[in-house]
Image (cartoon, protein in one colour):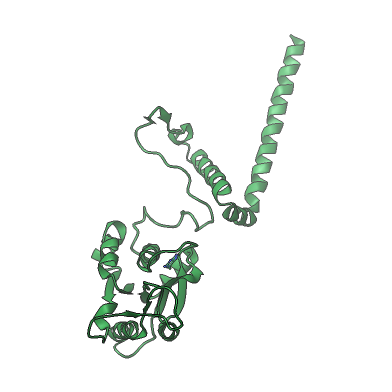
Length: 267
Ligand code: 6GU
């Protein structure tokens, strides 16, 4: 997977992604990252890349020419004149909201180009010609597309085979099954007078799994009722099984109680 980022701040992208898991994947060449400085492509003799918007209004716009030429240089290098054109993602609050399903889809691509806007945006005409996907990372406004690009590259990379080790693998994680993660604990057993939940020390694997699922469900219900509803819809059998189990337990308790009452009478 090769990421190409068109930006006015290439060092921000490179420095932000060269650590930890993503840094390791780059060192192993499972993913590559190229940051292209849009300013290098301006034909303006003062290296200017922005100008006032027609019709007036606040701020400056990035001009079409340097953006287009930077994009063209990247595409020509990737394809050497042939092959399908790579997708171009423009980061904008006006885009579709980024989600895990999108990260999975983008991870299938061989090349991805990210276009980072700054100032008040980019001349619409170049967007019309090169952008294939308009993406936002949530309902708030940022000063530029660099942080959203880094967020997306992180999320996409960890879906690329070989980036995560088996241990880190994304299968059982939040959003792959709509549920948020359960709480986790490591040594020591007591910290600030807080004990690790007893069940985790029991060695009973089945009980541990049950407890974790219950914790996940409770967290999701509290923090993300939208995800919780989805899970409930797709996992009706869990609640049916649970209800049956609880009914069995109640019956057992009643029997026990009845037997002990009988015993007391005799005595
Ligand atoms: Cl993709 N860009 C900017 N500038 N702000 C954002 C965003 C993107 N997503 C959320 N806020």
